[in-house]
Image (tube, rainbow over all chains, first blue to last red; front, side):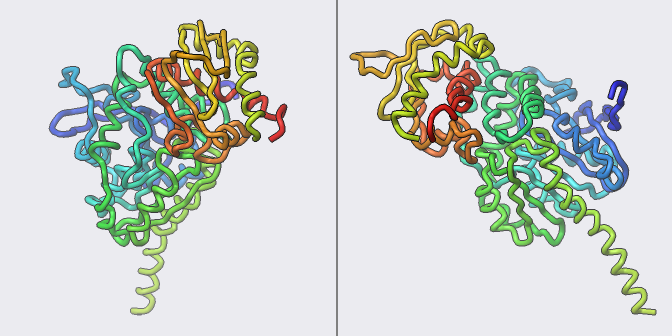
Length: 298
Length: 132
């Protein structure tokens, strides 16, 4: 509709990460339980625009998506001297926690996709008590590499073109063309070496095999949802990961690939809605139990 | 899909490419001799300015190529279905699962990756012409 203004609002927040202030761009919509959404490697928070604009979810959740430093509208920090960007596990976890702290979010839900899904596992291992629930999309403790990342940043290959072409195969063939193109556009727009630098965390620094069994879903529920067409993080990778985490909930999403929230938002909604409903109901349940206990005592 | 039908599909790619000017345009800076097709009987393709000027399956002596992307018959049969199964729907999904082999100097392939993905997907659009 001509003149339609979408409900999300974008702002910048200054976040202390590792002792340096970062100017972080984020968008949000809704009120209620904070739901922080983490984009995939080499992309930005726009991937979540359909979820953020969902009127029903926004009634119960404050849906927030931020651009990681070096991504989207979050610039590299002022101290950056042009060195090769490399995301590490420690830096990624610190960034997510610092962002939540800067916005004073009380026990947020964090939902991340791809590298965002991997860091969700790290958060579940080391910081579970800080979160209400954790949702990993296309998440696993380890994935078999399927290409050499050195192709992503070299002067004789167009970085935007090769990044987009590589990940294009991770989108399900059923996904609408416009959504596919929009998903790939973010990859064509990424800064030089940023996708490659994100994958440093994914491939070199973030191997969680043998570590995920420490996750206690009694402290923080963990949901893992993976698209059937994701051949980077396959459903088998996710199921193998969940098998060593008692209480982890796994959903294999049909007709979806590596970018469920942006490649086919309508199809993704079918799978994420029950998860968000369950998280919401879990907030109500303790109150009911308390009332019951109160009645018993009386 | 039968072996002969697969060969016919590959032989038709140059004509289908001519009917896709946006794809030719995407490859306008590409000049490359490469090997594409079935592992046991590949085609030699000469690409100039994004156009395939020669596509031959005939055995030729001492033919040079910069890179080669060849896959099994079952891989191409599945890849060209209107809705391929998960894991069979992308050229690099096929290499990951061991159904395709990518070798040689990969620069022209990687620098024109979407071109080659779209080029080798052209038979999918025309798949109904050949009995599955």
